[in-house]
Image 1 (tube, rainbow, N blue to C red):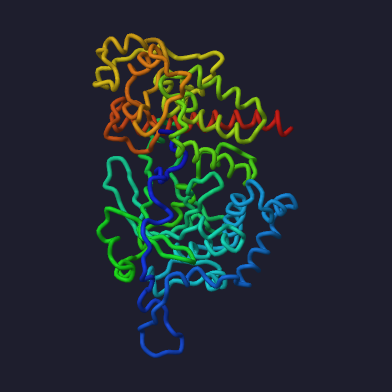
Image 2 (cartoon, one colour):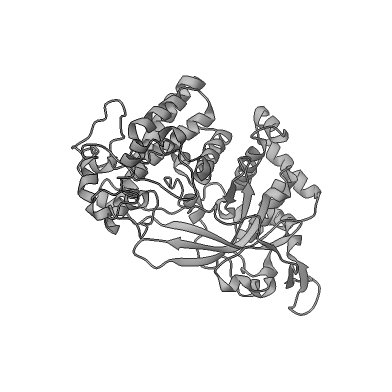
Length: 479
């Protein structure tokens, strides 16, 4: 529905709170007695890996987090006001990023560390850091009911290649807007660790390499109170916890530095100089807009060919000076490049062939839009032929219709004549480029061109978002 601002696929469909309680949370032979003979360990309740409730060591580490904050941020960290809980998440993550290192382990449950051991070791692997992160967040004042450590898998989808899946552990947090966020433990790397990315090139064909996307799939989730199973089509996930863990090798063959780029949203790269708390607000707004389909308005997303109306709404929000309105406007700008056909008719820069960002005042195009709707047939909700439908939209930038049974449509644009016109557009999924991997229902480009378009549109969106942010910051923040 919206531009994928990170490489992580939408994940709100999972019940991150858990579907059913698992009454046997025992991990057989999960820990070893240091002085005991033999290799067999002793049984452990998996919840013990979240550490001691009220741990003085965890509280002492949180004091180190506070010391690294300015006076205003420290006051926000210690308060219980709006934005304080989301800010704690960002502050703890940033502190761990500066102090922990990734240390590959044997990937078996019998080598997992409790939070105090991870702190003493100065790092650990994905499950060690996930347990520590959850413990720190709960001790900072975030309710355990808003936190889960997830055990499951992550799948890399790459166009033209076979998907690959690895076992993984991570943290999920229900933010103040009510949406579950994935907190990736492998993004908590020592400063200076850099993800390996493709080399940049001025050539469009050279730079538009297939962009992977990642799907997180939980099998079990836990907090200090309970262990839950999450319903999954994976038969292996239905096994008892001990059997499930016995055959897991959490991220045994995957480069952990992927997380630095996978979770690097378009906003992080475009909003230079933004504070961590403001960035969290922008990203949270984007996540909530994606999840809240019951409040769907096509003008917020440039859907149904509401191009001028979408820019008018974004412009109005940019004039309020409110950070939340800025966030909604930036999200909409990303959707314009993902959903509309502007990229097909946009001016290109000489030398790089990059898309020139759209100017809603001049509306300059390289050529007049022209369409053939026969590739999109049938057009949902329309009794017109493809030729007749296309005739209505010649010469205009368009976007697809996102008409879904599970959402609503604003009353003020539900007139019969208005709806009849908008329902002559191709379906959203047939025309949009809002995901790194092309959907089976896409009809606008072939797979190779889709990859070029995704890279080009994302780059143009980032450039446009950065320009808008810098103007907004100068006007309302005085810098």
